[in-house]
Structures are given as C-alpha cells and as structure tokens.
Length: 143
Image 1 (cartoon, rainbow, N blue to C red):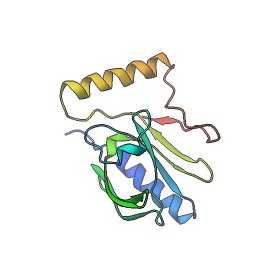
Image 2 (tube, rainbow, N blue to C red):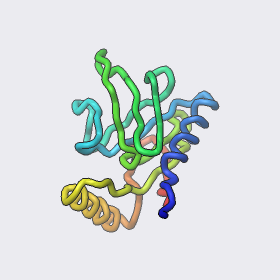
Image 3 (tube, one colour):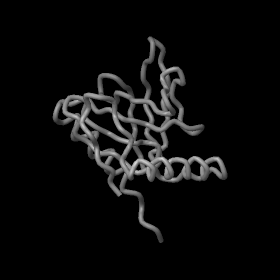
Image 4 (tube, helix red, strand yellow):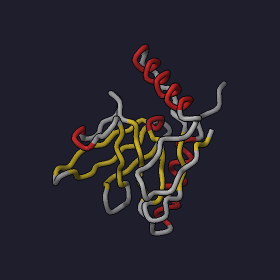
C-alpha cells in the first residue's frame, strides 16, 4: 500500500494557519483541462487565487480537490482544482508558505508529456521552483 500524499494535509494546515493569523491565503495553481477556473484570468498556464474567507464561499479541501465559489469580474464561478495542481500556498501579507513539486495526474499521454516538459523546465532552471511575481518572497519546494 502506498502512502497518501502529504500535500493536501499541508494545504489545509497552511490555510488554517493563514486564517488564524489574520493573513490572506493565496494559491498559485497550474491550470490544465481538469482545473475549473475562469480562463480569462489564467496567465502562462497558471492562476493566482485569493482563497481568504472574505473572498470565497464554501471552500472545501479534501485529499483530491480544492473547491469553492468566488466572484470574478462581478460574476460568481464554481472553482475546482486538483490538489496536485496547487503549486504554492502562501500568506499575501508576509509571503510565508510552501511550494509543492508537481504531482503527476492520471490522464494519459498529454499528462505524461506535460510532466516531462515541467521536469525539463525545472532541470534547465537548476531545480528552482516557479518564480513568483517580483515583490513576493521565494518559496521552497517540499518533497
């Protein structure tokens, strides 16, 4: 029997830590065909989401999915994110948080090709995690 991924547990813990400290939790998410987010807000295959209690409704984080409702441009959207697509969770105010290694999702050749491309990009970049926008602290990859 293989061990469960630690990522959903870290996500829930860091989300709770952010909220308990009055910080705004943000998720950086890799968008693929399984990810349900407003495409107009996706840039370079990623989206950054404010998942603080004042920004979302009915947030639920289980071992496979992060789901919630949020408003984008005044319109309500149902958001569905595979846990393995979460690149990082961090507090907007301090930048403290955690970045994650990409976990392969079942899905055939497209998923394998995408994983290979991500691995090549990380190897070319000397195994550095994706760089956040300027002004935000660096996050380290947790294996």
